[in-house]
Amino acid sequence: MSFKNASYFAAPLCTALLLVGVFAYSLTLPTPKDAEDYHARVMTASESMPENFEGWTAQELPMESGAMELLKPNVAIRLRLSHPGYATPMEFLIVQCRDARDLAGHYPPKCYPQVNGYVALEANERTWRAGELDVPGMEYRFALSSQPGAPERYVLHFMMLPDGRIVRNIDAIYEAGADYLRRHHGAAQCQLFIRDASLPQEARDRAFDEILTAYADLIHAIGSAGHDTTP
Image (cartoon, rainbow, N blue to C red; front, side, top):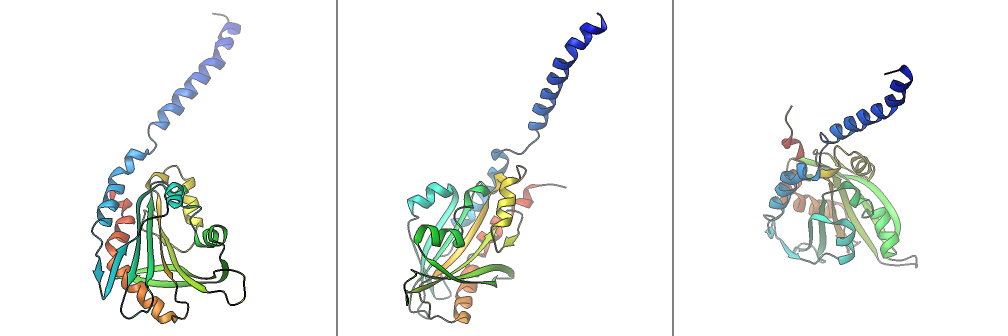
C-alpha cells in the first residue's frame, strides 16, 4: 500500500477509534439505575414518618398537580401540622427529586413571587436543629400582595444534597444538576409555611426544631447516598 493510500484511510480510522473510546467511556458513567437503591431507601424512610410527636398532629395534604409535573419527585410530602401551643396550623413540605435539575423552579425567592404573586420583604440566614444535626437554611418573609397592610407569611426553607450537605440556596443544586456524575441521585428541599406572621422568631424556630427532629430519619436518608460508594 502506498503512503498516499495509507493517508487516505488514516482519518476514518482515527475517527472510528475515537468513537469506540467515547462509547467505552460512556459505559463507565453513572446511570439512573445506579441510584435506585438510594431512592428506595429515601422512600422507605418517608413511609415511617410519625403522625404525632411533641404535641404536634400531622394531617396529609395533596400536592398541587402543577408542582408534581414540575418536580417529578421520588418523595413528595405535604402536611398540615397543628399544635395546641400555636393558634394557627403550619404547613410542612419535603420533596426529594431523582434529578437535581427538577428543583430549579421550586425555590421560594422564585416560586412565591412568580407563581403566587407574593412580594418578598426579607430574607435571613438561620440555623435549626434536627436532633443532633445542624440545619442551615433561610427564613423568608413575604407579603401576599403589594397592597399596604397586605397579610404576611413566613417560609422557613433549606435544601439537601445526597452527599449529606444541607445548603441555604439554590447554587449547590444547580451544580449537582450540571454534574453528570451526581445528577441521578437528585436533591431535596424542605420548608415550613407559617401563616401567623405575628409569631415571634423564637417560637418559629422552636416549631421547626421540633418538626425537623421528628423527621430526622428522613433527612439522614436523603443525605445517605455516600453510603452506596466504596473507597
